[in-house]
Length: 92
Image 1 (cartoon, rainbow, N blue to C red):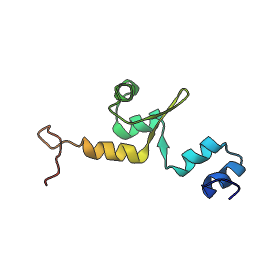
Image 2 (image 1 turned 90 degrees about the vertical axis):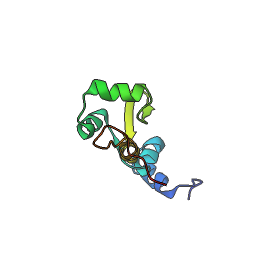
Image 3 (image 1 turned 135 degrees about the horizontal axis):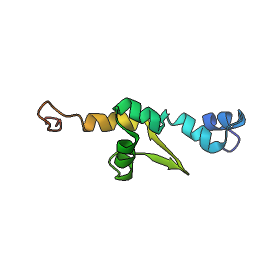
Image 4 (image 1 turned 45 degrees about the vertical axis):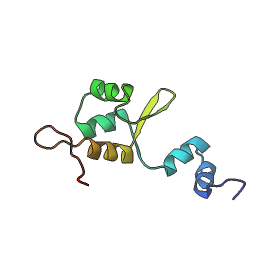
C-alpha cells in the first residue's frame, strides 16, 4: 500500500488531490455554510452563532468551515422537539 494504511486515500492523492483532501473525501460528505443554511432554513448569522458557541459540531480548515452531514443528522435527531417545545427523550 505504498507505506500508507489507507489505500483509498493513496489512490485519491495520486489522482491529483492532496492527502488532506483525500482524507476528507473518504470521511463522508461535508456541508458548506450555504448548504447548512439551506438544510436548516436559517440565516448565515444563526448558523455561525451555533458553530461559534459549539452548539453545532463543525470542522475549521483555515478560513473554511464545514459540517459533516452525518454529524448534522445526529445533531438534528438529538435536538428534535416535540410539539410542546420539549426535546425528545428516548424511553428506557
